[in-house]
Image 1 (cartoon, helix red, strand yellow):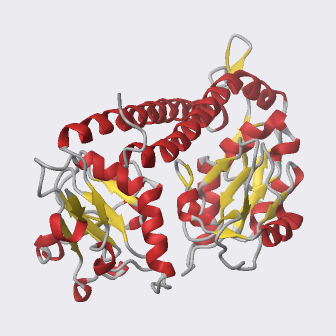
Image 2 (tube, rainbow, N blue to C red; image 1 turned 60 degrees about the vertical axis):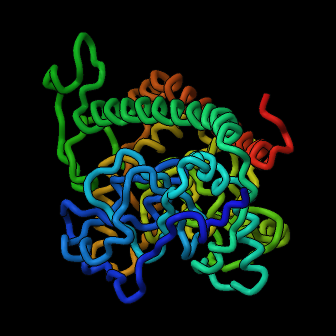
Length: 418
């Protein structure tokens, strides 16, 4: 059977005149709306959804989501995939998303389609459509309706899905462990550097009644002997290019603030630039193993610690903390950038801004507790947990690359499932 997405499946998008403005979003509601930023490739980030009124939800019954729907982004970053699982209450989608629903469950295992849409096969389809005239970053419904694929029988689909899902499941298991470790790291950081319950003599500093003083620079109490300095005094801070290199058919990824997500770098959403542009950008802001990246515009404050040994990307509108040269304290700087201190600092810088943006000078001048023997002790004590997270992330990267390699082969049956 040849599967045609437009003919054989339920395919809907939001009707144009029913689009929502951001000022229609609510602070809280029983009704959620998914934007492309909530599509996390493997799942929907329910915490990153907006809220709308019941009236706005009710006016578009054709895009009221159901469990196991597939979502495809059609604007900006084309072809991001979300899989609706464990839906939290009534939910709809914004104008930039298609809804796909399985209407032939006896002939199609929807996990098979999920892997197909995530694979290079679908990415190539999108690229070909753009190359043939769809030059703007938009995927039309008639374009998607032309996507066809030779579908094996349901038994073979199930066998293929079992193989690909086993890799997916391992990635998910690693992500859950990473999330657990990182939550523990944050709790420990807060305990030591917000509550000051770090080990001291036979107790903790605060419980033993040791002296604290209020510091107006970070607007918080700190141990009496500790110093507050500017970030520039601890680590060199740069930013990426301010130019806009042209997209290239091959080359190196250009990573911007929107590509730094809570779970890592979204390479699939980034376009490629030429080697010449890549080299030019790196003269100003070369990313090296051990550096830290910080999103400066749009969604400000996403932090990424660079652990890759082979770095094949350049940066734009991203702050670059050159911690590659100071491994001793880089985990502390990384946690500081994720801390409530940093959130409070950026909120103060961003207040009143239409376009959320924080400048390089502000990031250099922000305050931080100067490294001291207790911070050295924290870094030594937590090194194993950070190494564990790094190992899990590297394993996930290998598994993701494996999926990209084998999925086209097994989906097209060039490699047979035994």
